[in-house]
Image: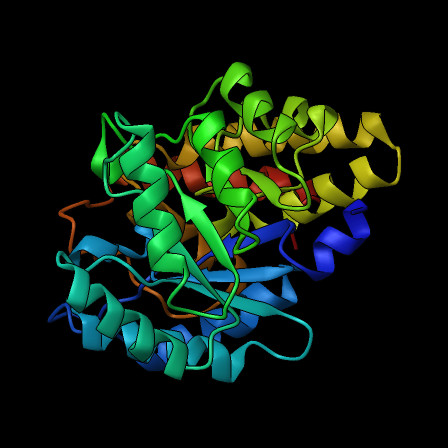
Length: 303
């Protein structure tokens, strides 16, 4: 499958969605709808809602379902929506979660690994059996929530790909060995990169997309990097990679509050920086984001 075919299916640039909150920490669904539209306008091939970046661990199932519904409603033509669908703790609860998320109208599921990475047989059996309960494509996510046993071996991933139900994986090994191991057994699935430092190397090795935290507010840069690489303009891709890396550093330590502030700087959407994960935005981080944003605008990297 070519890179262009992957874009239309399950590769390319995924925008991870933030969850905006009101002062009382209830979800600001109106703000979220505008944010969805903005992410689409920034060039996302696909949207990943109720992700870890959305403060998944702090969201009730009914909130996750409503966020999925709003994402689908505002995605526009040609954009696919994926959502986490196995976060509930029990098997039957996960099956119910899948039904409710699917009823929201999503195009595909994201399954987190549940920390079974220390047992290939158990890992593959769990994800294979769960995926057999849906006709939707499934992207796997090595979520660090389940560290230290959240990674999937290349052997286990290859076995899952052979079931025909796995469309891709968000690799979080942060090593080229781990990335290339999955690419070698990926078939027509898309190995998506979460680690920004290895992003260009992953593309050169055959990685077919990106699903990284900086996409919460930097989709435009990631899309420019993807397009430059696919068009053979390596110099331009390298420049965009620099901005991706510097953005990652700018967002670190106070994420996702930092991303929420940068969304507001770029889009004008009145998204405040409140979080449920107890991350606040100190003044020096705010000023640093303003400096970074101003430079990116002057260079024509951002609007």
